[in-house]
Length: 274
Ligand SMILES: O=C(O)c1ccccc1NCC(=O)[C@H](O)[C@H](O)COP(=O)(O)O
Image (cartoon, rainbow, N blue to C red; front, side, top):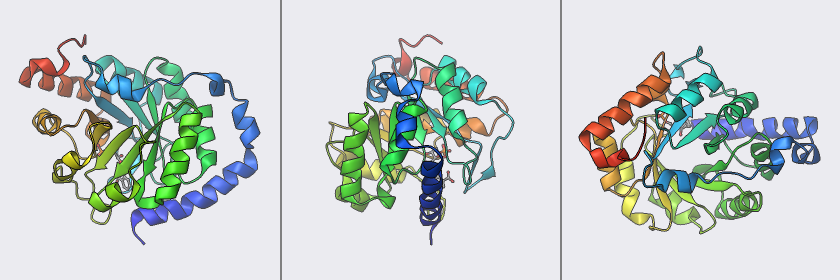
C-alpha cells in the first residue's frame, strides 16, 4: 500500500466516527454554514495577486515534524499580510498534525481571504464539515477518487458555494478525472511512492490543462526563479507549505519570497502593497 492508500484507509474509519459524533444536520446549523464563501479563483487570478496559496502544515509523511510551535492564527495572519492570495489549512490529524480547530482559527483570523480545507476528501459528509468550519475551497485528489466521485463531490461542493481544486500527479489522472465542475487544477510535483518532488511534472502537464481552469502547481516550491518559470508555463497558483513552515517565522519566509519575486520581475506583484 502506498502512503495515499494508507491515509485513505484511515480516513474512511475517521469519517464514520465523526459522522457518529456530529450529524449532517448539526453541521448545517453551524454559524459558518450561512457564510457566503470567497472565491479562490478570483483571489489567485486578480491582477495584483502573488498567486501564492500559503499552507499551514505542522508535519508530513515525507518530512515528519516540520514546525510544532507556531500558532495557526498568528501564522496565517502573517501569511496574508506578507502577500498570500489564499490559505491552505491541513485538517488531517494523524499524518499532518492538523485539526478542525486550525481551520476555524484561521477563518476567524482571516475573514477576507479564501481558505482551502486541505484533507483527503472521500465522502460528501466532509464537504459539510468544510463548509461548517469556514472553508471556501476543497481539494479532490484524483489518485484516490473515481471520475464519478470527482463529478458528484464537485457538484455538491458547488451547491454549497465551495470551489474545487482537483489535484493530479500525471497525465492519466488528469485525463481520467478532469470535469468542468472543478475550478482549479493542481499538479502535485511530489511522487507519492518516493516523496521526491520535481517541477518537471508541472511543466509536462501545463499544456494539457485547458485555459478555462486556473492552473496551480503544488509541492517542493521554494524559490522565485522556479516560480517565474512555472508562471511562464501557465501556472497562476503556487501551493507552498514546507518552505515557509520549516522556518521559525513562516510569514517572514513568505515575505522574503515575495520580495525576491518582485526583484526578479517587478510586474509579478506590481500593485501588491506589502
Ligand atoms: O507532504 C507530504 O509528505 C505528503 C505526503 C503524502 C500525501 C500528500 C503530501 N503532501 C500534501 C501536499 O500536497 C503538500 O502539503 C502541498 O502541496 C505543499 O507542499 P510543500 O510545499 O512541499 O510542503
